[in-house]
Image: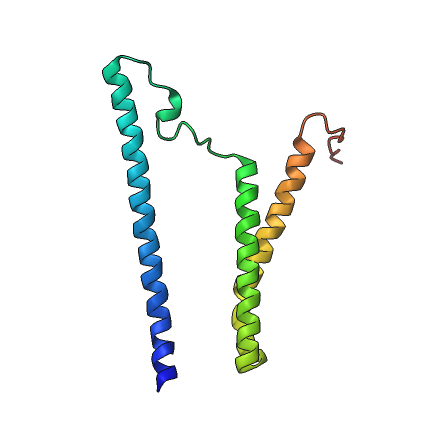
Length: 138
């Protein structure tokens, strides 16, 4: 009986924790935006020039391949380990058929790691001065 209650409370606790993480993230983002707004207003009241770094979006360049590579590496590693943990846990508890439930996140993680590897090769080939020859097309 006690184990059944714990099995039912697990997903509920996970959903509630994700909800609170989202709420905390929104509050922290709001405070950051409010602080930047106060700084801009203070500079404008004093008649000083407002630096571009205080404008939202100016500090974050879009389409940076190095940032994408870092995210692929982190998320790929996390997904691979989550999939492996699920496969091991379910394999110990329920056998081989149950452990196959962890193959999907494991494969997604491996795919992200492979994409990161391909992106790294692209960055190395396109880097100026690396001595690599352009590929010839036949």
